[in-house]
Image (cartoon, rainbow, N blue to C red; front, side, top):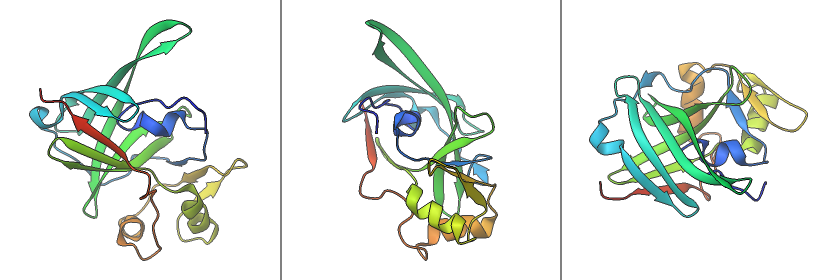
Length: 179
């Protein structure tokens, strides 16, 4: 992994890590999550920094997540749009990846003023793709690119029948500062 960790709600650890990633060719989840501004907007902190979140489109589940970081001896702001979608009782955060048409994703669970984010485990998804259980391909650097998933395939993801498919032991936990 790169030593620098980009602290953002979903771009969070997914964009900046040098580890293998799991992307998908369309946002994961069937339905947008309705986002009441009073529940999501504000400053959120985690062990590596803070991010500011604003609701861009509450009906479409769109958030803008931004932060300030040092770059080349100067302060610079960065922001990304995160789309929250729901399927099979889970909420997924989706973020357009650097490669056009690819989306980074993670499971997101919000409880009051806390958000927990779990990344997909690339090794588990590599196995499922190689076994033909999920549609996709594995690239030369062990990144996994999933094709759009059916409702049955998403249920396979969320059911636990295939073992632990997310990095359960290494979540990113955000706590909102009182607005």
